[in-house]
Length: 321
Image 1 (cartoon, rainbow, N blue to C red):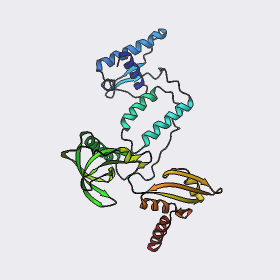
Image 2 (image 1 turned 180 degrees about the vertical axis):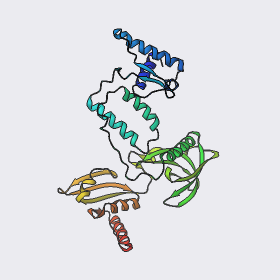
Image 3 (image 1 turned 60 degrees about the horizontal axis):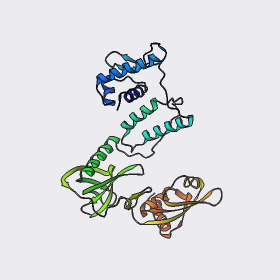
Image 4 (image 1 turned 90 degrees about the horizontal axis):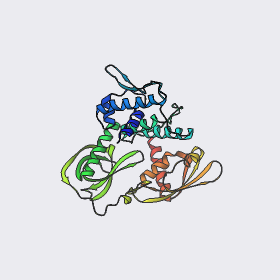
């Protein structure tokens, strides 16, 4: 990066309002501290030349936590964005940084700060609030550690061994060749060849209990194609796909039309307080749980097996209480 570009970048960094040590700025600009001092002098002299009045743009801050800071009276040119564009950008920033599954928050924060420093944002309190009702009972750092472990194993083609807690088979040791990391429904999975099952399967990162790499390298199964295992709607190998038709009334007449719950979803209105939803869903147990979660406001029109399964499960629940 040239001297002029580094001067502009340094101005944008300082425009975030923080005090930056010379060594910090040098690291961010991939240069040495001596050049940072030179850039400071260059920028200050450039602004002096505008009308001959001495007003340093970058000023030193002395003391233990000292460094360089932007002069509070300095005026830095900003990006020419409309108010709608500014608000959109603020929303994008806040939404991105609020996502619990976004593992590059630190890098994104630095990037957004640089961009924000060149945008004149007036309505800084108008922030998008994102709340995850049922977040994982696991620290983000722990998920990140597992992500980075698997990312390295995938890149280096190293087989792993892990203790895994599965809904299907309980707690079990798996030896797996990890192929790909996937984010689905606000959770991280990886897809890999399970040696014992002799098939490619999904594993959820938060269900891994212990893990380590083995001294063994693998070759990706020649028939593996990512598009066979996930698409824009999520994970594909979760059992047979079933065509479902539901009738929703009351509050759920509105709720079911607000989101997409499966493939090929269509909405038909049957009066002001009734909605007919048709869609394709996978995994019988998950479909039954979905319908039961809607309560008495949702009725199954078809298929018949789902009607019976919901009724049987509801009866079991009734007897229990």
